Length: 79
Image (cartoon, rainbow, N blue to C red; front, side):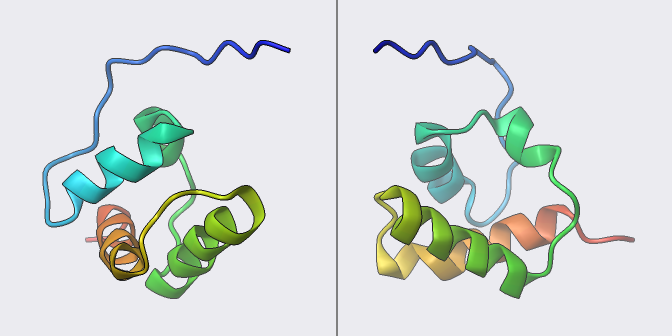
C-alpha cells in the first residue's frame, strides 16, 4: 500500500522550539495542519505529544516533549 502525503511549503513560525517542531512534527504532519489546530494549553499539547509517541510511535525524545508542548502552546496564546 502506498500513501501519498500532501506537499506544503508552509513552515512553523520562529521561536524557541521551532527546531523540535520542524524535526518531529513534520515527519507525519504538515505545519499548516498543526497550525490550524484549536488553541490548547501546554498540558493538552503535552498529552497530544505523548499520545503521538505511545499510540503512533512518533520518534520524539523524552527531553523534547516539554520543548514541543511549550512551543505549540505559545503559538496559540491569545493576546
